[in-house]
Image (cartoon, rainbow over all chains, first blue to last red; front, side, top):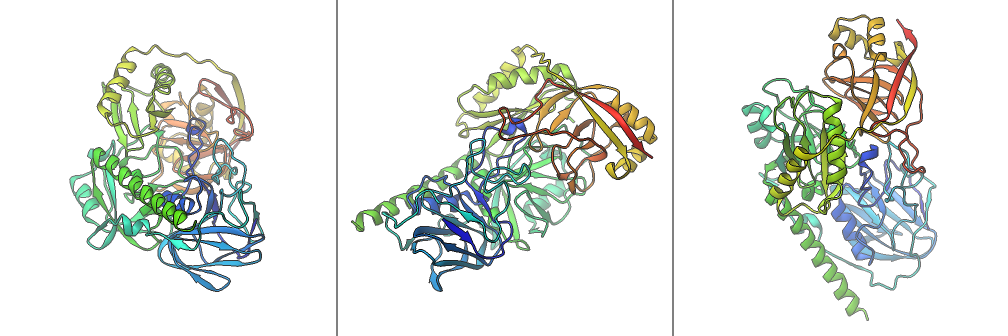
Length: 323
Length: 220
């Protein structure tokens, strides 16, 4: 059991997401940085998709009501346990009464607090992720509040090794364009319907993540993307990563809490393998986009998997060494 | 868009593909979309087959190595699939049109050149088949709106419209099941519980059900 001590905002329980209910209008939700979630879970010997706490605003403090191991991954925030600093992407053992504090990150924007076995909230429609719009999943279908207590599936003194860390996804899988974080994009159905100048400007330009960016979507600011002729499209299924362009010309990238359908023209889709990069792009920062093919998008997913396999191998080595 | 004569397949990253039926938005192609969804949902590489408005999204369990083969199979299935004439329940919904409940009524008046009375009457006239669910838990996309009411989606989506909002987006119309962002033009409000995650199925309406809207009041 842990207790949220800080007045916090927008922290939610997330796993990989809710799949199979799109036909009821239920979007997937799920971690904005699934690599960080998988990493934290691997450090604890959990299944990769165990539910954790996603933290987008800092400071964030929790008190351990009982002995409990934990891992903090994702944004490089200043983490400390009862004042003792912890390195990023680290697994540690907390004792009853100790307080974990997460400070403002020096890089990245979302931290994950992973716990042994995962956060113990009910699975709704196959997932523990918080569905904010539907007000279900997670803890009572809402963001966490000061005083909330969350049960942990495997509390106690860990039988797994603790006090070690691994290399972060951003170090293991760097991707930049002219010094800015970059994401690969696969063109979508209406790509050809935008003007040549707009298309060229999209790939060449810097895009600012505006303050109207959240788990639903990232509203970007840059040179307007204009259609050759106005496009009015029938509503259809969409997925996180889809870059919609409303008539105003400023793109919106659908994120994990996005609607499962929409009808604004689609410029492209940020590939699944790179969505975690966007999930870590802070508000006010600039990003770039790189055009890619379907084969490259599939290969990028395999790269992410290789990183997680390597993490699993390192965790296993620590286990052997500590016997 | 998509009044092309051939179906169109496009990619949504490596996560899903989108199949768009040719021709005008209508119930007959939608019945074939329902049929296609039923088939494609059983294919091994497909996680979920999600009907839209005369289109179908297929999400992948794993991105298919041979995408061409999936596309060919889909086109072949479309050419051969019989319509699935779902006939569900008829549900009546009272709607208050205009005023505080229809914050974008003025935009629809301006675009269509019709007065509020005419808009409400035309909007209540059809028996609307639920074509598909989407947008948010329990939301229904309805087919068969009078084409004279068609109004483009908004230049910039609004951050939140209320639960029960009755709205128009292009040639489509629908009723919001909960409060949230929308790019559609809200012309009225109704009250109904559309979704309960503890029920099976969790959505109260399903494709093929029919909505009968009734004018409860018009605020001029």
